[in-house]
Length: 548
Image 1 (cartoon, rainbow, N blue to C red):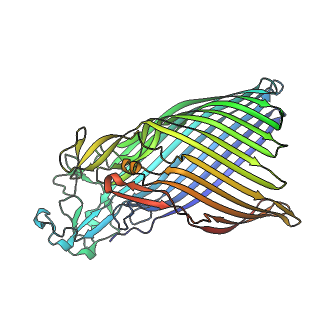
Image 2: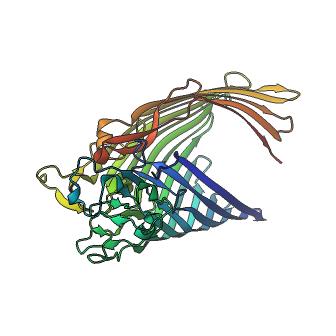
Image 3: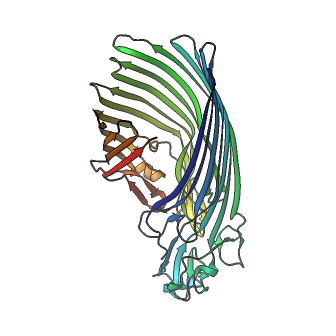
């Protein structure tokens, strides 16, 4: 059996960065920031969490290849002031290029011999005995990518007087993405070590005439043969090479994103030493792009739209009691168009995969309070409270399920690799906003002991997040399988050398050893399974750092 190894992630990352900072004169500064990063790695994922090799994906197994990605960035900034320091400004340009030149994942499922027990064998031509007939489903998907972007930006702060400041800014961004997807299926000539494996003429069953022990987990891959109605076959008499096995798609987008803010500062008033109130309006976007998910009917690589957002924030900040209290408060409203959310799709071969789609309209609003208190010398108390309210106003998706009985109204009956399925449009606007807690509470206390041997800083923190939902598909979101409260207690003891060059810390995370869901693979719609990932258990450690 081609079992997957346990879930794991492996990566080797090399980075190089260079920053050049030049004060041209008293009012003008130029900065250049350059970076390069290379990442080579892959992962093993058992997606359904049922403990057998049925639905998985790996870049580290037989036939697969680790990804290799190079990324380059370059930014130039020119900052200065003018008009007797009434105007502060920065203008600049940013460039980014990323290229993945290798990387292929396989999705082994099986082989499961004797899978036809109790089934009338004559309907499965090619299998002589049940013991030699195996269910085996796998493919090899190579993804090669090129992503480039460039932008120009500017921001200026105009100080009307010593109290009022107006900030205006904007960014113009150009992006281009290219994805090449090369899809392969098992090569029958190498599927058995004896070279005599045959297709059993039913879905993904194969015949091994020389016995189960001849299955070759290191078999090769080849272009699939497709029948005129789009079904996979290994019979060259009825199929031709899939013209969509290799696809290259490009995506490009330009966007201008403005922002504006008005701020009023205050001198000491009563117990307040300093304060300011501000109102900010900012526009931003999250890049759209090309998904490696293939449409179940057209078999074409899919695109998703950029996520666009307008954020409105009204805030107040102050220092008080001889700067022993710092208080920040903010009211915010974030309006999303085409919010990018994760859902589940089925490929034309019947494989299940995650996909990015857009929720047309949604918003998040809330209030945040943050306070830092220094009640006595060397003692610091930090507290934060956030309350969120959200609504998905328009979110259309598809739900694919087995065709048991008549096709429901509004649904479409589709043939997926020989299996009849119902493809139904669904409205998901009544769901929670994924990964957004209703409320967040945080409290931390630390004290600094000054000694001739350096400073010693013990710290204790507590955090609590309520009603956080890590769901993907419609059924998991509506049944709240992934909806949890998350609590963490952390402690840290740090020693800093007198010259502050050395730092040694002992720490403990999740001291209460609470276990809660932080994610997983919801497949409730399709397989009635819900694989879950839990937080890290109680963890202790020591770390050391030297700065020069």
